[in-house]
Image 1 (cartoon, helix red, strand yellow):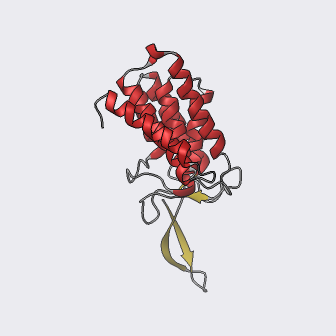
Image 2 (cartoon, rainbow, N blue to C red):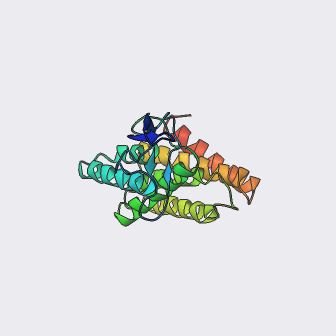
Length: 206
């Protein structure tokens, strides 16, 4: 937050008002690419505003530090939750950060961590809100998720209960996509849901 003094018609100082600024770089207005400040969480007043580019950089830096500590569980946290209000990002901000999280996993070569990759891709699929008109990449994400599952299926030694649960959650997500997405296919969705149910039963998490 920054303080900005306004003047009255006589040119005399009138009052001090709060002007939103990026809580990360502390700059007001647009970022270098011309994009404005944004906020889509539970912050109120002038708190919580940031440039999307700054938010992505912050999430990437924090996630890289977590990975260096082998703390992979917290990577999602930095891309999903506002550190100021501790609430999930929503709407376009959630979508942009979910996409950035997938790019982070892929460019940092963490794709061999199947749980981390599936979690990122699954959240990305849900962040699309199954809106094929404005966010047409849903089919590509759907196909990629199934290909990751197939890769894990080829190497049963990779699977443990935790990864099996992650796969079950992913199968629920792709089932939802085929149920509510632009290319509805109830039979295909049913197969995904049935396999998810089977995995949950195997690990005792019904």
